[in-house]
Structure formats: structure tokens, C-alpha cells
Length: 293
Ligand code: FAD
Image (cartoon, rainbow, N blue to C red; front, side, top):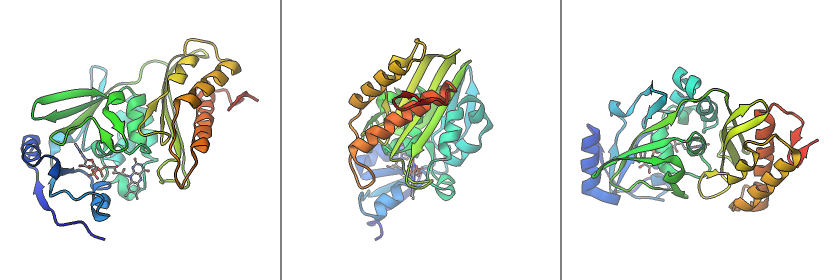
């Protein structure tokens, strides 16, 4: 199948993009890497009248670190996340996670802004942004807004963006002393969307978490910052503590059921991920789901 007929505009600036979006509203769609938009159009899941191609806007490119904040332009491609020395030094969770997004051909074109705006609940990067406490910067007819990643994702393919707004950049605090991270996903094949995944960022002092942000993906309608992880913070690790956190996690989740997995399988995998995360971050290979041993 091929896409319905549409008009095409190559944006000349962010201002020009905003003018086009204001004039056409939800009949227009922004084109970044095209790796989600074009398949959706070709399958006729969506049929925008106008495509606004922002691919040439250099002002949306680039990675910079200033005053403890890492800023990444919306057009930062997945491959840039993998290869950037600044990101490796200041947000290594992203370097690791980007390698799990699709395949090289898609990572060469797909962008950070596109992935976040698309808001697939099984995507790796939205979960990382929540784990890293990122702010999403968007610009629209009323000016610029900064939205906490945790509040940006509203549901399956739903975000806080209005049709007139453009995602400009993402900002996040650089990793702190004693910071460590964990990323793992279960998928049928490398490069497939996850069946269940976990992106986490923590501060570990001795064998105690003083901060722990566990964000699960593919187990709900958006990335889930698990409240259950709070049970593991500022207390020495015990198997009973992990069992309690695991039970709370089970109650917190409302996983979907589809051809890949049942809801109960996803809930089980999330608990396995939580135990694996604690084990890796505390360097305790004895810890498994249900506690040590
Ligand atoms: P586009 O396709 O250009 O746009 C996606 C959506 O976001 C559109 O609605 C568009 O209007 C909107 N948009 C784009 N940029 C902006 C902006 N700056 N401001 C406002 N709205 C904007 N992704 C994963 O996360 N994990 C995977 O495992 C994975 N596997 C894939 C496998 C295949 C075979 C394919 C084809 C894709 C896969 N993807 C996967 C999706 C891929 O990562 C996309 O690149 C990404 O989801 C969207 O980025 P894009 O730049 O291509 O966005």
C-alpha cells in the first residue's frame, strides 16, 4: 500500500515550521527521520494533508554540555546518541539504550525528537528520558514550554504536544558522583520492539541506593516511573525489601496483552527486570527475582 496524496513543505526555519503548523493544525504532520511517520502513512493509519519536513533545520541539531546540563537537539539521530562522546560521558544510559532501537538503517535516520513525539510505549528512549529526569522543550504559537518527561507521555502515541507545537530539544542533568545505570529489555529478536524493558539511573553509596529511578517500558500505555523502587532507597538491601518492592510493582503495573505476551507474562518479566537491575547496580550476582538464591 502507498500513502494517500499529500502536500510537502521543506521548512526553512523553526519559525517557518510553526507558521505552517499554525496554518494547517492537525491536518499537518512534522517529518523528522520518517521511520515511524512514513510506515504509518503507507499503511494508511494516518493521512495528513501536509508534511512539514524539518530535516534541514541545523538549529535542531547538536549536543552540548553547559553548567551541568546536557542538551540534545530534536534532530539528534539514534546513531548520534550511540556515538557521541558527550553523551557517553554524561548520560551513558542513552548510549547503551540507543543500540537497542531497531536496526542500523533505522538508527541512521530516526531521531530523538521523532521517537519522543511518536510516544510508542515500547520505545526505549521515552523510558530513558523519564529515568534521567529530562525536560522536553517544545515551541508553539504561545512561545516555549518545558515539560518534565514524566508528564510528557500521556498514553499510546499520545503526548502533551499540541498539533501546533514542535519538539525542539531535550535537556537533562549530567550524571552525578556515584551515579550508575541499568538497561535491559526482553524482545523476540535483537532490534525488535521490547516485550518488557527497564531503564534505570541510580546513586549507590556503599550498598545503599540514595536515589533510584526505575522506568519500565512496554508494560503499560506509557513509560512507568515505578514508585515501588522507593522501597529500596535509603535502606540497606534485604531480600524481604526486594520482595516487598516486587509485589508493589506487580500492583502498580497494568500491562497490555497482545500476540507477543500475556499481561501476566509481562508482569513477571518486569519483576525479573527489577531484580536484575538491583543485582547489577549493587553488584550482587546472588540477587534474583524473589530475593537472593
Ligand atoms: P518520524 O517518523 O519523522 O516522526 C514520528 C512522529 O513524530 C510523527 O507523528 C511526527 O509528526 C512526529 N514528530 C517528529 N519529529 C517531531 C518534532 N521535532 N516535533 C513534533 N513532532 C515530531 N523505535 C524504537 O524506539 N524501538 C525500536 O525497537 C524500533 N524498531 C523499529 C523497527 C522498524 C522496522 C521501524 C521502521 C521503526 C522502528 N522504530 C523503533 C521507530 C524508530 O525508532 C523511529 O525512528 C522513531 O520512532 C521516530 O523517529 P523519526 O525521526 O523517524 O520520526
